[in-house]
Length: 316
Image 1 (tube, rainbow, N blue to C red):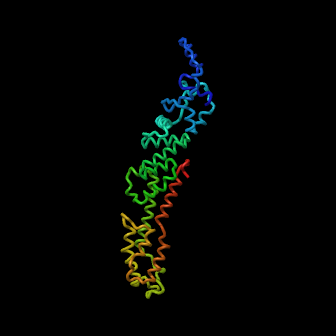
Image 2 (image 1 turned 90 degrees about the vertical axis):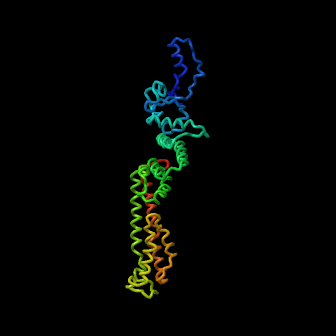
Image 3 (image 1 turned 30 degrees about the vertical axis):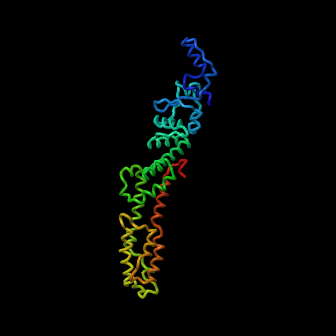
């Protein structure tokens, strides 16, 4: 306890004795009962709070340096004469102090908004205990992914980014509600929409252009092998099967076929009219041409979002 932080109620025994003398009460203090209780007054906006300073500094490490700054009025700092000013909203400081007084097994009554305020002020105070506790409580609320992503981008919570984006990415961006767009933020919504447009462009391109077999020449064993293979019945069956079975599923507006599942799906098709050798070459080319485009674009989106995170104890 710093010597200049006096009790928040009337001061030391000597100060109280002086007050008694001025009022001519004839009273006198017993000094051992007026030992410093380590309580001081804090001020946020126009509200005054009395706290146990030792406990407060244990939980709000960032305030310690502020309290230890040189001050012109050491004898009155933290008293009714000059409370210690804390530059946060009074509501935020009140929530932090309410949390500070929670018992180990006591059930809290904080709302989601109050938990967010507590995380904010806990970050300002460099109170890892407070922010760790808030994250645990928020995770118990099962927040919707848009809200979770918005909070992650605001406070630098890296571990929330990937699961939130994975949930949002499987839904078309035009299905996001206004509330979801507001919660995640314009920039995040724009990144997701552009990424989905890129995926959709790839779907349309690959659905409407059947992959050529051996650069259009077909398999050597195919009786139509040569420069005119694209005009053969083998290629015609291949293209027709692609348009009807694969292309439709790739651009299905509700449940499109994932690129990662396309090769396995094509392998299960009958390919009637396509020679077995051309079929095998065509399937081999799909493994190279398709890969896992959805996952690659999703990974890129996650990386862009992580790059937007502000620096915090949770941003890595």
